[in-house]
Length: 478
Image 1 (cartoon, rainbow, N blue to C red):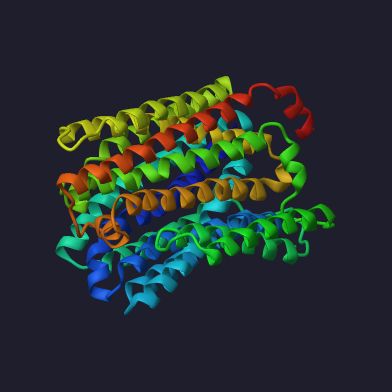
Image 2 (cartoon, rainbow, N blue to C red):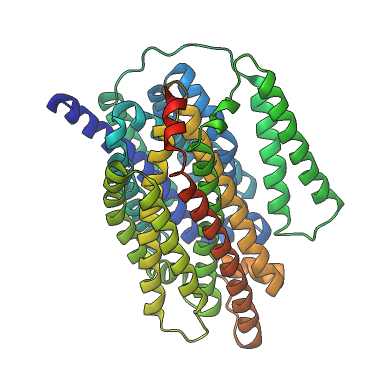
């Protein structure tokens, strides 16, 4: 790559890293603010979960659709629009006055997050050649992990010394600067074909995901009943309808031919199972530190900072390995390391020294830092250029669906061991359990960790399968 082009690519990568950083900050910083936010806005325990989950749900529902819009109307344009929507949503969140307003404004913020996350991977694939994409995705992992740490530190400071509203106000100047840099640094979109939107496909897929995710979330606050069963059945039927519509659409939103590309299907599924396993762990360990060990949300989060720092260092290294050796080895090795981390977390007891939690988070950060850049590079290397946006959005959708189900699983485990009200109180840092109740809650956490181990093993197997069909992958890209 010529020096001038390399400089432009470097500037564009910085913009992408800022977008990833903002998303990470917004994840950890909101969790720390939940207790005081719940009290000031008079949000019920069962509703406060939507402050976190609503944001993630919108990104999940929109990722594929806005990735498609990026392919149609320009990925850079959609990415820049995402910053604008995110800034507006953040300002509205800061101005929230009750339970309904904070949830709705978080949904708007999630729309901006969907535009950013679904198109960032495709922009990297546009700018960097295949043999440099792993390194580029590795650097975006720095943005994610640094953002998570900043969210913990800034969240603790802002909530303690200022107001929870500042966790949203802080996004406004950062988002404006990021938008200005994007307008200056990212290349102009050109050569995209303006097609009609696949409205039936968008509607059926969005409705299917919503029905399935809604049912899972309801299970965290209610027993399984006919209503929940109907939501699950509706989701499955709508998914089948989506497949039928896409197979007959002239210009489908999700080309089903992508699933015939040997690398893509196992990569998507590996992302799903990794999200299913790992996202629950963040909440389970947080609930262990707060509910069993009696730490504040900030003190508990600080114990996990070393893992984020190690992940930020590991990401670029794993990305370079993916460029040199292919994605299979670093991605699969990262998942294997995370299996070890889950087994170590399983050893946590009522009196385990707290430094052990930090040490295990380092192992987990090492594994996640190995998986994400390599898996992203595998998807964008195998996807045809004309559907980079769709492929990037589908990867985000699979990962987020796993994360939402993972979140529901974590709360279900807690609610199985304790009353749902107490489980939610632990989640937001307002309650501590000890004695027999603490031991029962810990057993529930251990059971969920074993489920995470099983999901990670499935992800590792799927990741390893990608090395079997490299010749078929080359033919599908030709």
